[in-house]
Length: 250
Image (cartoon, one colour):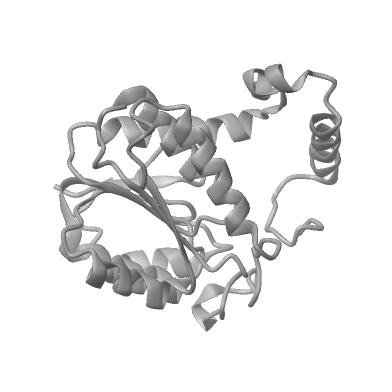
């Protein structure tokens, strides 16, 4: 079923109601501003925490691999924020561990017939100008990390990834990718971006997928299978989260 944010959900109606109540409590929290962020875990569900643990799991796997982190399909930007925080924890002096996020911020530009019946043009959009809000958040978070004077630790690339990703590599031919996370959901940009990153990965690169093997978003799996020979790779799952997967380039 779909909720009023027009995202695909799987739980019963009481789950949706429960999460709305949690959101109301978070928005009206009596916790003082200077303590609210220190207690943000108060509002995390097990499902949300498991996703954070997965991102932490992936980040730890690339600590000895040179390269940037790229996220294809950023939307609200939570993963970019998490990766920024993890960089500050695990490798605060690694100035080359740049985090780059790609998104239209206006939803899916189009949907292919391989994408099934759940996803539609314009789906998973954000309010106008949201990328500026995200940039402000990331800038503030960066200031909390060591060597905060060294800017450009992150970059938000706005537009259709079919066009912006190849253009990014044209302008940044030095790029090596340590972690590429795919959350585009749909077939065409996923395939084009997977093909685009191939010259820039290395042994040890982690490629994460948000919806592999999911019947509600078949385009991601089809694109993955067309670009990677899965007989040569082990597509692994994070056992505490059902949807997420990753493979290691070896």
